[in-house]
Length: 209
Image 1: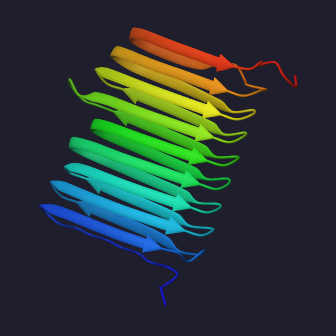
Image 2 (image 1 turned 135 degrees about the vertical axis):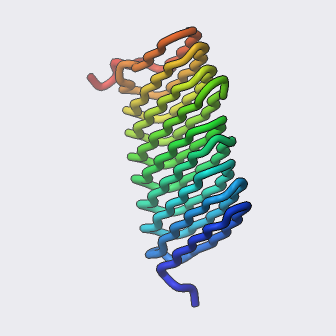
């Protein structure tokens, strides 16, 4: 029988690798990794799950999958190295928060209704930020912020009444912004530096107003 409250903590000077798999609806996972190279893989199935990963002082990789309702995920990657993170959530009222500092690549995918996603990337020097944020469902909210020399962001939402925002500050900014559905709100794109924007909305944004 699995422990309904699983807590993992790895603290290593060189490398850390954490793996957690849960099917209990009341489970929670917490992983802290400190080292030159850190890797974490979390899979949760059920309702009411929560997961938190904190990687610092080096390069980090995170693969986090949640399948159920009312899931919450938080990933923080900080250090001079690279940060790679993939978050996937399926269900309703999911919340995802991802913060990276370094050379960053991130992907958040949510399927359901009422989901919220926040993605923040900060890169020092000539580092590059790459982010993909995808939501399929209704009344989802997405926020993506990038600070660095080279920023590339792609956001996609399919549903009704979804909202999203993109903020980029750096020398070169590239944003792709797609929404498909009815009752879409006003777009919010803010860029400082080089500016390239591609915006696509399908169906009437005034439907239901």
